[in-house]
Length: 305
Image (tube, rainbow, N blue to C red; front, side, top):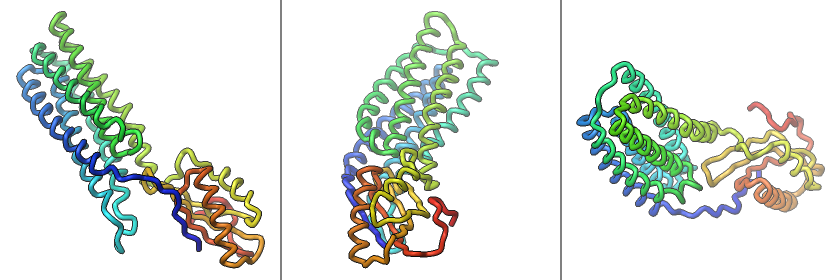
C-alpha cells in the first residue's frame, strides 16, 4: 500500500494569530461591559442585543484561541492526527452561536414591537461609536488570517457582523434622537439578526462538510478518475474517498487496478506520477493507494464500505 505526503507548504503563524486573538478578546470584553451598562441605563434593546452579540464574540474568540493552541499540538500514538481538526470544530461552534443569537434577537425584537419603550438615544449613539471603533480595529487585525483559516474566519465574521450591527445601532440612535422613531430600535434588531443568519449559515455549512468528511466542493471524482487513467500503467481507479483533514490538508485513498503484475519498484514510480498529478491538478496533498491486479471486487468509483 502506497502512502505519500506531498507539497505541504503550510506555515505555522500560530503565535501571531494567538496574540491577535488575545488582544481582540480584551477589547471585546471592555465593549461588552460598556454596552450592557449603557443598554440597561438607556433602555435600548438594539444596544443590549449588540452587547449580547459582543458577548458571543468574546466566547467565540476564546474558543478560537483555544483551538489555535490545540491545533499546534503534535500527533501521538493515541492521537495520530494530533488536534488538526480543533479549528474546524471551533468554526462550527462559532457559526452555530451566530445563528442561535440571531433567533434570540428576533424573539426579543418582536416582544419590543408590542411594548415600545422610550430610549436614551444619546448614550446609544456614543456607545455605538465606541463599538464601531473597537470592532473595526479588531476586523482589520484579523482580516489577513481570515482569508486562509476557517477558525480565524469564524472569529472575523463575529467581529465584522458586530461592527455592522453597531453601525445599525448608531443610525437607529440618530433617528430616535432627532425624530423620536423608537420603533427603529426593534426594526434594526431584526435586521441585525437576519444579517447574522446570512453570515453564519455559509460558515456552518462549510465546517459541517469538513467534519462529515464530505468531498471538497471544488473536487470532481469523475474528473479525477479520467485524469488518473491517463497514466499508462493504470487500468482502473475505484473505491475513492477524498476528505479534508483541515484547511491545509486534503486526503485521498483509493484502490488502483494495474494492467500487469508489477514490481514494488515499478509501483513506486507510478505512485510518484500519481502523486504529482493529484497535487498539481486537484490540490490533493496526501494520498493512500491500495494497488491491485486482477482482483475481483467492485470497480465503482464510490463503494459503500
